[in-house]
Image (cartoon, rainbow, N blue to C red; front, side):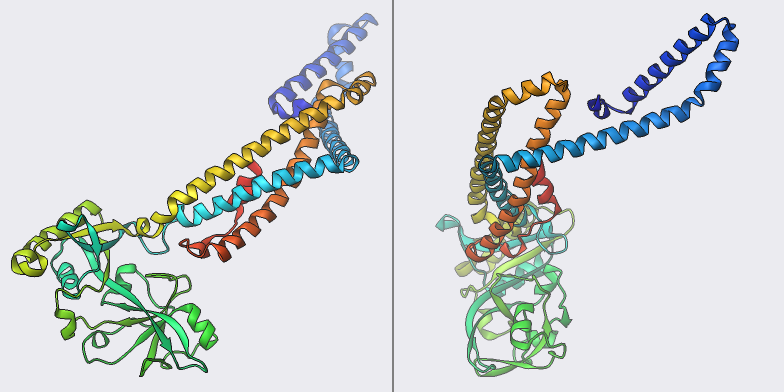
Length: 441
């Protein structure tokens, strides 16, 4: 009765105790029938039987061996079944692999893009800031430099506020010109994000003032591509337009703000004459809320400041309001709906695959009625036949799951190469959680 192994240790032990008591009682009755007194009969039986715990352990050992031998025999029979029916087995394995692989790949993408937190300290505190004109139905626009600095100076709900904007440029310090994306950033940019350079330092106050020395931070990708990860990169220059700008730091791998195409970050002097014009809007704002502050608190705070600025500068600020949104929502908003629809589609695909496989297995079992009848006639129990059928199904499911992981790996590579418009695709990977998810499917 191998199936009792799965019922639990207590059931097996109770049955073992009952059988030992039965044998002892039967032997004692035989001794009494032979003329011994009951106490003498019990003593003689116990001496012949030996220690009950020792006998129990021998029975347990034999029971464990029986379980292992039965399982190995079932596995061998399952493999022979797959060899005898290669078309049937291949159909089930490929169907499972397609459903599980597609499901796992899309689940990996959803985890990396939608579920996993942003790679910054306390990412829930980060928000994106825009300004909009209340008369134009909330059309978000970049923020004027001087207005961004006023929001940073007068607010009471943010640790700090910074901003950035991007532009394309040609970098000509290499053998051939190279098109790069540059992000022009305000003071406090890395401070708001909670990031420190992997090599070198952040910009100094003098580099962030009008007329100060030039400086540039470069991406980890550009450092490896152009400079071959040279550890002595600090102090070397890149040519931006007609200026040779010294490199003061290398940002960590995976840092991709404001977007994944940026290779250079340069400081913008907020005291430059052009930056004082309130009508020139440049920056997308990024802010970090203080602990305990909500987005609603931050929005109300900035709008109170903006109301005062509207009274002070009615020509440019009268109708302006601040918009505050979570940074993660801004990054993944466009991808969320399409990813969940895709996940629903592949989940439905997996359910259809499992339904088809169940139908195939039931049909196959019906065809094997003659074989099962013969096994019954030879003395096989109902439990052993059910165990054999379940083992065959398990082997097919395991093979399909393993192949499904390979399909999922290919799906992840497809996301990396073809879905470049999606955010955070570089974070899509398979790990043990997805392997467990696949096996549970």
